[in-house]
Amino acid sequence: MAYRRFVAEGIGSTVWENVRGVLLGKDSFVEKMRPLLTGKAEATDTPLRERLSARPPLSSLFEGLETREKTEQRAFEAFTLHRYTLKEIGAQLGVHYSTVSKMVRRAQVRRDTLHGKI
Image (cartoon, rainbow, N blue to C red; front, side, top):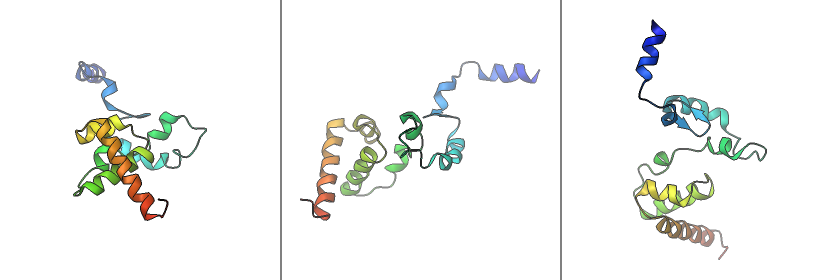
């Protein structure tokens, strides 16, 4: 009887709405598993999909940013460190991917200027 109720409660829902990279589950489960995946992003023998599952969600990367420079810096990090696409970052920020490209470039120029590369 419990199994029938379990199945009935799942009718109309899809398992794919809870997929987080290679992890399947709620946000609390994914956050609990994330530490176990650290170091996977650098391992080249690990499939890209698994390496990307350890990256932080875009929503948390852009949370509470107050200045344009900070937002551009975070977009640069999301693109270069966490390997989000310009389109994914743009969707999070509500701008076109070409705008994100310009943001990333400005942050890169600022970084290079600070480190004496320009």
